[in-house]
Length: 243
Length: 236
Image 1 (cartoon, rainbow over the protein chains, first blue to last red):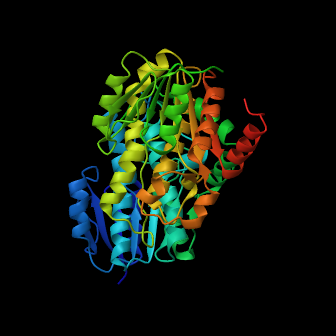
Image 2: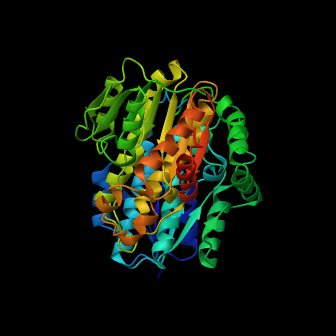
Image 3: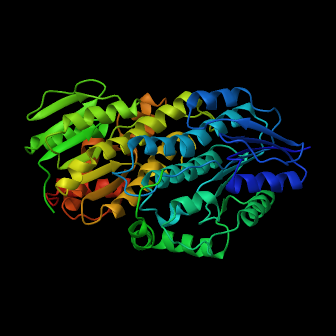
């Protein structure tokens, strides 16, 4: 039986991935600071862990299940609003959860040797910019560079970076401007299926969906203009700090 | 475009940072240099002990040191370790991320009111490694992080302060050695630190006062062009 690790397993995209993997017959170990929903199959095993706590991450690394085939680093938090009015600790936490934890975990798993696939969930913000979430933007760009570095360093595990646009989750709703519609956000179950398909086909970088592909291309061709557009579309509409 | 009068340089005790401190002091700027030890005695230059492996503490120290106001903050402190087959170990990853990225973000946060108050400039020294580098994965990640941060913050601060992301190519400093990297003969191709510092500082000068974000990659060729122009008496 194939075995997967998913961080951020209790909600949003992480939970969708857990469900999709279980449906596909995988055994899944989920990591999250929050407890997981009831009713998941017996092939699921939950590890509570606050990824912002380095000691907890180290304990998790020391107790990882053996023989993992796939690891999906999906856990992520954000801090949106004006950079200078968001508390410093909130920024530090974003970097700890979104960048430090997945890198430390991935490194530990790779050192053990059994992993054949690693998925790092970053963000389309890497292509388009994210004024209004400067520490989040930093953390996601870090993750993509780490993925590229690993690929340059070694053939196994196969490393995929995912750069989703907005997803229809409670997290996205919390950090979006007031009154923003969720129509254009991707369904998390749909995204989970796309991710697993991309893993099977050996994709290196996944920008899921046409909108993400186009926005990503625009962001790479005209980064300054795109970041300026993001300022108007996002930053100027944020009316409060959320972390 | 103007020349900043009071400048902070983190990582000012070695490498590119030290050359920046020398340049700024030579042209009459008031300089605050940070590092884990004191740097050399230079005119109008003050040294402040800050260890960026403890980001919150480093940010508090810097904030206090700059309390009288700062025109420009150049965040140059950086570290890295070489990974064997992409594997570095948790301690090395944490150290690199915290020193290079978290501390820089928190220093920027601590100085934000001062920079916004006088339309100052925040310059983040990244690296071409930000595109990904097999030998230095966490280092690459940290430098990419600085770029993402600068790009976002620069737009937030548009019209209020200037944020510049500068990405040097390989430079002849002690960093490669400290990282455990064997550079060997390739060091001859690296840009000398003083020339890189002059090139970076020229870009900071050009951006200062524009209140717009800017990004520049100072690849090998650009710095060498500058070096050649200087020898011919062309560079301003």
